[in-house]
Amino acid sequence: MTHVQFEYTSHRLEGEVVVPGDKSISHRSIIFGSISHGITKVTNFLDGEDCLRTIDAFREMGVQIEKEESSVLVYGNGLEELKKPEKPLNFGNSGTTTRLMLGLLSGLPFETSIFGDASLTKRPMERVVTPLRKMGAAIRGEADGNYLPITIQGGELQGITYRLPVKSAQVKSAVLLAGLLAEGETVVQEDTETRNHTEVMLQAFGADLKQNEDGIVVTNKGKLTACDVEVPGDISSAAFFLVAGAIVPGSAVTLKNVGLNASRTGILDVMKRMGAALTVSNERTTGGEKIGDLTIQYTALKGTTIEGDVIPRLIDEIPILALLATQAEGKTVIKDAEELKVKETDRIEAVCQNLQVLGANITPTEDGMIIEGPMKLTGGTISSYMDHRIAMMGVIAALVSENPVKMDEKESINISYPTFFDDLEAILR
Ligand code: S3P
Image (cartoon, rainbow, N blue to C red; front, side, top):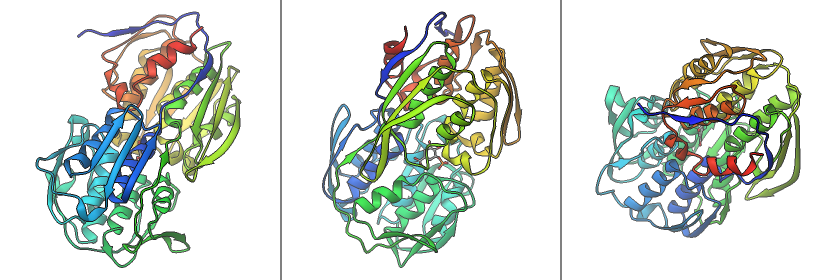
């Protein structure tokens, strides 16, 4: 197998990066634009493969969507006008598309089949299928509908009250989307707050959604009206340069217009606790979402414990935080993160395996990992596991490795950050 080699010795990072649009918000802008009435203009849309799957799905259902780089126009005609797709929908690598669309398709009056790539086919869908069936959805698929390919015979749905058994914004969003099509009230309750972009955006589009002591309550009574969306920069993408700036000696990097929704900023809290020289400036709000600029400077860091309620607020950042911990003084313990096992790959295994190869002292546990630092990384040959966030972690590791890092591929990075290497090159000094 041919490997790609990354070698960045004796560099530091300096300058500004405008990271691309948030993946979660980009998906939702297409979904809500497509089911509302009028033209939704989306700016700073993430032009990554996952979000393009969501655009393709609605085009297949008859929605006109015009896209020019990161500007998208969605010509919504309402839920009623969505048409049965002529062929099965291919959701590629995108868990968000799959889980959210399962909710919507459950209430539409036609049958749809969906499938995905090898990674998506291994990811559990029971977490969304169970509440949707309680609402009356007819879903069939592999292992009683736990795995793709899945066929959904849409029909009438009844509102339910559902307490999330997994801390998942995708499950919450699937139930809320089905709730837009259900008779009566649908109530979602969560013990730990997960990202709330669905709630924020649905309210902006005019849905009948409120949050009260019962939970998040939605009905089919609101009229969804087109609403322009300015997508904030993705903090999950910014995370790679935040960590790079924190661990490469002499670095000073500013990340512009990054989404700072409190349900996503766990990484900032943890990095500050570890002693990072991190500042937030230019804070403002757009479309109900907070954004701002983040500046990071290299400084010595200390280990910490990452557990409990912060986990859903940084779940996608754990691979890169594990790398950060290898460069921090002392022990870092990551707990309560068993969800990592069902991401694009088993990220506990992928992170530990790769960082061990690179010379780190890291041990996997049932629900996370334990890292002892600081360790000078040696370099070596790793695998991306075809997972975008594992691949980017490997590249950033090369910045602090004595010898090159070789990896089996880098194309998976296009899932969430197609301009990753351009942005990195632009700040290498
Ligand atoms: C997402 C929610 C998270 C996250 C994923 C995107 C979303 O997944 O890991 O990258 O857009 O709702 P879970 O809901 O499975 O935790």
